[in-house]
Length: 424
Image (tube, rainbow, N blue to C red):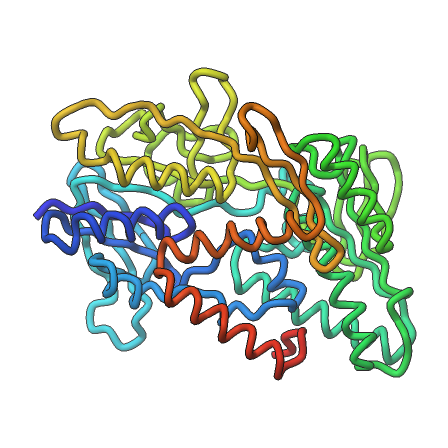
């Protein structure tokens, strides 16, 4: 039986494995295999909330093994250590502590790479050594624990706490708002002997001239206004020159004290991308053509954050976003098998807009071509409802309506009995 192997179970990988499993795996027409180093899937756009402790990732994950059984594909938990494109096989080191043969070889007819991206520090001295990243749940949890420990210490000793977020994209902006909400919650629950909220300084450093530089200027202005209202300091047109263990130094000579520095200023392909002998761009993302096949091997495809995709009509690169990743997965699920008999159509990315959640302080965004060709700017309760629905619709498409509703009910019940901040 011909095999389609998918490396990486992020937004794109999980969506593709689920769709192909349902349409081909369950019918015995193809062997569908998903490989990921983690046992569970977590929606990456929510990592900022994990870092702030406002959600528990255990209540939002999707178990790969369960998903595989329910949807007709196989799951292998492990790291890809080698890909032999000549023999069309890959070697996976499984994460099984008692396995007699920890490495297995999986043959493929089509290989789809969707292993995401990692933080790009752009060679800034000290950044990789002294900054925290939010690429994985583990990193977000490490940040949460450090952040809460520092907050409790500040509340007991009266010392100030400085946090610097490098990058004012969606991740940086949403993280800043969530951290401020966590601080306010700690004060409300009286976890310290004093009101230390005024001693926690959160600063965003951005080299562009505004926050959310990739979005409409009106959305950027609305987000900046709300961030300023809750005490977030915004430093635009400010480039980072160096990061030390207790400060962020800028190219114009400023020095921002920092007990915790978060780098949210860009992404690049992981080390695996450079080991495959495939063409990559300057950010180590795999270069693919208009049908998402790599330029060097027609049997290998790439999608999501690890891929570099340029819209041939506009000559604009498709953004590394969950919205784009889902569209690529749906495209490949619909058209992948046509390669045996016809040429694939070109992938066309459609930007439906973007929403940025500022936690309880509001949601801002823009819906592109929402009414004919008109763009609609949204905020407040309506924007928050759309933001929540976009996530729940994604979960529903993978695990089904009833399981999604059950998870939502369980989280609501837990919210009535537990504190709103995850401590452990």
